[in-house]
Length: 143
Image (cartoon, rainbow, N blue to C red; front, top):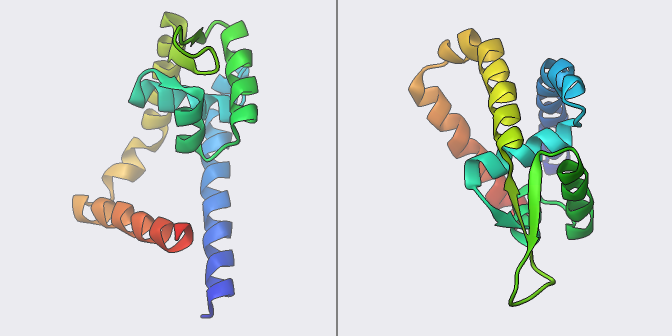
């Protein structure tokens, strides 16, 4: 398999995985009036804690302008809090509100319940290999 065919296969599999997860979460995202992208932002903040827009953008591979707009929308809905740094007003920290934490916990619990049985069919060695292989792919495509 040549590089382009391999890359296109990876892209296709990645889109299929994202779409499957998105479809699973769609009813709860709709209930909470958030998009799948906004769910992903909440999930990163839940895992990482408070981050500034630049850090959050980098972790999610998004443009800072787009990230800033998404965080404003999440703040209006009560899921995040944005605070400008006193020493440099250009730097905006984003953190989850109590409502944001409760919402992401509900969505994550739903996702875990939805995939728990299938996930447990994969042994620990396979799970670790999946992560290792994704890291290798990221190194290949990041350099």
